[in-house]
Image (cartoon, rainbow, N blue to C red):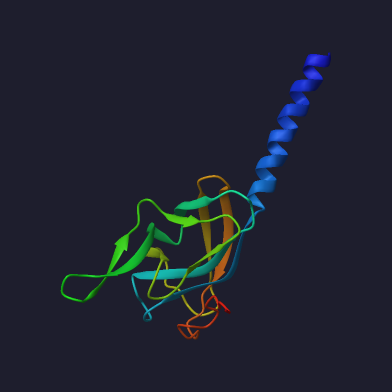
Length: 156
């Protein structure tokens, strides 16, 4: 009987620690957009904060809103033209820090939209972290937001 109680307590402790760890990742200021009405692709942006004492990494993202959803970044090509690239290794989210997914930088790319995105719509995303696991977020479509609105501010 003691053995059975110990196993139950251990399983409960593991379940609670996983949930607590996932709670250490927060997502704020999220929004999605398309470049034009009827666009076949869009992007989502947000600020991800890791309040835990352990580094984490955003390694994947999933959504039914698009046929293909990937983590992307912008990089200047050899000819100086900016290119969007799939970031297979994901984005590091250091302990006690944040990482901004923003226009012109790291972002979630939604390719082959399954339906047009209109201002005020919502997009369901599942963010997959190396340590924190899966976190579901609902992202509003905001076609009016300016590129630097909500950007992380650093004071010195």
